[in-house]
Length: 102
Image (cartoon, rainbow, N blue to C red; front, side, top):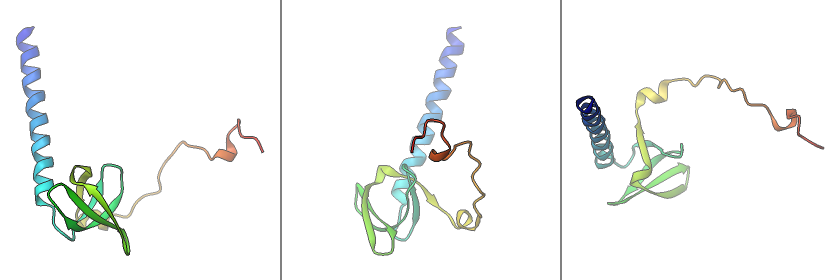
């Protein structure tokens, strides 16, 4: 039982280290002009980089400063070519709610 538990912990730790290294490699490879997603879902283009921060242009002329750790991934050309589908949501509008009062 202990051997199985030890093996599980070893492989889980190894997977976590690989994911952390991939994130570090991404942050070290960021360049001005890259389109990125932040962890909060914001899409922007990098217009400035320091050791700890990136400046993202989120709209023409609108530049915000973010920690590098907030960058989740780089948007590639393949991501831009994909046409988004209509989201399938079970959410209802507020006016359709049975608890809604005028």
